[in-house]
Image (cartoon, rainbow, N blue to C red; front, side, top):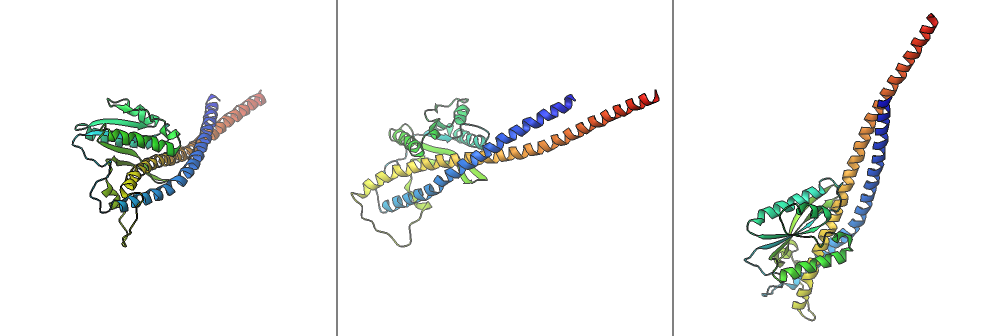
Length: 291
């Protein structure tokens, strides 16, 4: 009887856990849908910004700001992870890739790590690395405010020669079933990369710049960098929700399988108890009849 009670308790506990995983899956699916409504227009918006900058940079001998190379090597690595777990290998993959990138360049470079998300903060504080933890809760802010804050910090630090290179490490969102870790150079800004990704149309376009072409370029580059940061934050959030949705779906399916096994065990144990009780009653009845 004690064994039967243990099985019943396990069934109730797993059924309760299954309700939680189902609820978490639904919440993540809802959040993923909302963030996708931001991600898709943002990609097109950033593409058009890049095309406009590419056209503005045509036939210019003077390089724009934020493109200066340097012989010194002082690297800032911006790493985006999640605040919470229960999202499969999402945190593990991005933190592992970031650490490998830092290890690869640490021998010849002074490295600092700017962490976004509590999991990244906890991970890098275990190592002997300078960690900037002022932006751990950045994802809790509105996207435009968060991206503007981080972009301003990176540009100011780069212009003041605190860093000679800034790279972004985050999880890029491909679709709800596939997410990949991306390591993207952020600063110095190289206009030729934009030109390669977005070639000019076959028919050349001619623009009249007001007040000047140089002022337009100086205004466009920080905006493109801000959209790059926003794109990183949005893709990382979408990847987190997709990973958590898949993990909770798998946990729900595993709970179903475990419940099936436990219910079979419960039925067998109950049947055995009933059979044993019937045997005792029959034996007692026969003994009374004989006496």
